[in-house]
Length: 123
Image 1 (cartoon, rainbow, N blue to C red):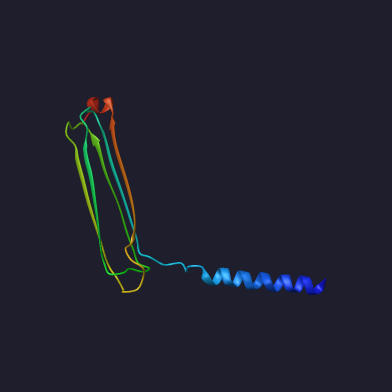
Image 2: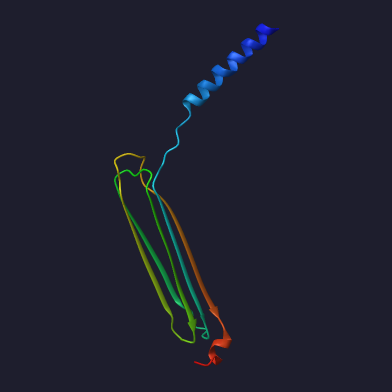
C-alpha cells in the first residue's frame, strides 16, 4: 500500500514537472494607456464637435516600459459652436528585448449635454 501511494506521488510530481516545464513564460510587454475626457454642457442643441486622435509609435521590440496620458476638456456655457480637439502622441523606443508591439489601452469619453438653463444664466 505504501509502495502504491509512493509510486502515485512520484508520478504526480513527474507529470506536473512536465506540464509546468512546457508552459510559456509570462512576457513583460510595454503598455500604453491613454485616457481622454471631453465634456460640453451648454444651452445649444447643435452638436459639439469633439475629436480624439491617439498615435503610438514604437520602434523595436519593447519590454517593461509604459506611457500614460490623461487629459480632460470641459466647456460649460451658452456657445452655439463648441469644438474640442485632442491629439495625443506616444513614442516608445525598444530595448531589443521583448516580444513585439506595445499593448495599447485607449479610453475616450465624449459627453455633449444640452442644458436649457445655460441660456438664461447671467454672465
